[in-house]
Length: 276
Ligand code: ZN
Image (cartoon, rainbow, N blue to C red; front, side):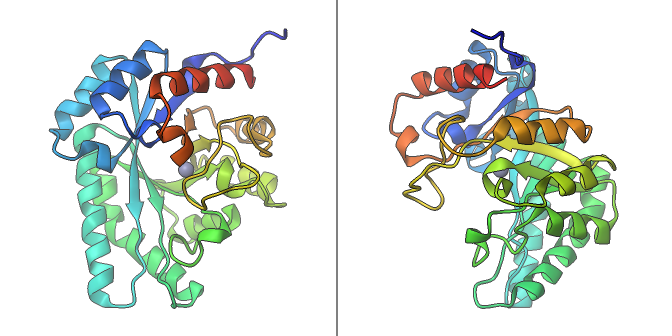
């Protein structure tokens, strides 16, 4: 058997991947499995002292990699857009309290509104909260979503669009999150990774796999190796482009959420190490 090229040094798991676990359990079990980083979903913080939770993560030896998620800026009414900006301001406060250096943005789309209009509102929304993010020392990562979500979850559907948006905003506090689930199909992916990588704008790298058939458009992501995504190749591209951060396992799965989470986490680590 070939020697694995990966160890757990860059392995991060999103709390939503093990959604049935309260965050306290996730912290303990991730640490026990040698996971080095945790991306925290905001729902996992409900009812908690956020600063204390961040400290607990660090005390367990884990890095707080990012907070998921902000965004959802577009809305047909001014009041709706303002409500989104207010929520993103709260997310920035939460990230700062948690000690998370980054917020991942699922940018949003307003159903029935032309996508170019939603894209303008996304840029305006990011620009509105950017001074607060910079003052708090929290970066913002635009995560392009697969076009199947263009109706209501994101009008930013390719890395090219995310790069164009970052170029228009032109702030060192705004970059991209490369998620293989959303981007693997794009013929321009390698070139666009190079484009943002060479200016240091790749802020995050998310991994999972694409199952065939996919039974649920949102919650049927596969474990790495279960699908058709050339994860290793894409990881090579982001590394060639200068990214040296965490490999974040982000799996929404009705299938896995109903299984034993301890077994699932063990399997995540196993397939991750074997994927080198
Ligand atoms: Zn992602």
